[in-house]
Amino acid sequence: MTTSFPVATGETTELQDYFEQLARQSSAFLDQLPIERTPQPLAHALELLAPAVERLRPRGLRALRAITRPPVPCTEVREEGVGLNTVGMLTDRFTILLIKEWSLRHKANANPAKADALFLQQTRDIIAALAAARPGSSSLNSKITSLRSAAQADDWAEAYWGLLTTNLLMWESQEMLYIRDISAAPYDELRAYISWFSRSNIQRNDYIELSEKRYWSAGGGRA
Image 1 (cartoon, one colour):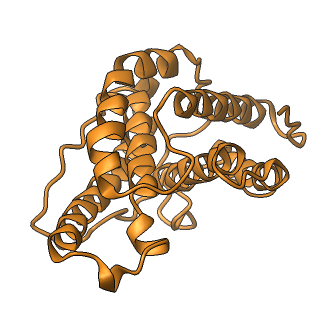
Image 2 (image 1 turned 180 degrees about the horizontal axis):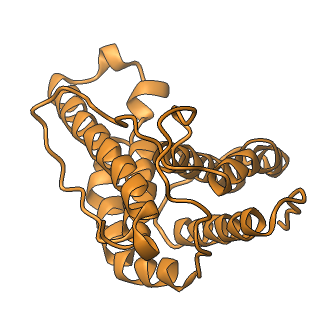
């Protein structure tokens, strides 16, 4: 699907084009993964999908790094007026919308028209916000927890990949919450789900933070 963006400044338009390319590449990644058409239990995400994500990772990072990102127009930290409109938080929403759009196109009871509307009405708005984003000074994710994740990223591409794939695994493992009767789940299965999901949520938060930091560092590299 080809989307035309509204007229904007040269720098902003270039960044919008960049994020549109990122959206297309992300969809291509999802096409290559063993995502089932119907909801699956947690075991599918852990035993089949997660290993496939890891195998795709080297090729995925090369593809992301091959997309030329225009220089960001301003890296000066603003003391106020940014709020949650940080690159990290916007990228989190961006990746979730891309996963939702892909699901609307490819899963059981597919609805391409609804997928088109989602991109035009929501994803395009996030892309415009990303293109106009400025770094803020507020703490992004300051959860009080003893849990630690394995999230790491040497550059923006790796941070983006981590956030996209973490959100994908969380999306694909939510059958227990939205499809099944959670009160009827076996105790061991429920306990495993809660443990895995809480750790994944911490990892997601870490990748949101890394996405913010790496995007604004020189050339999208290590800060």
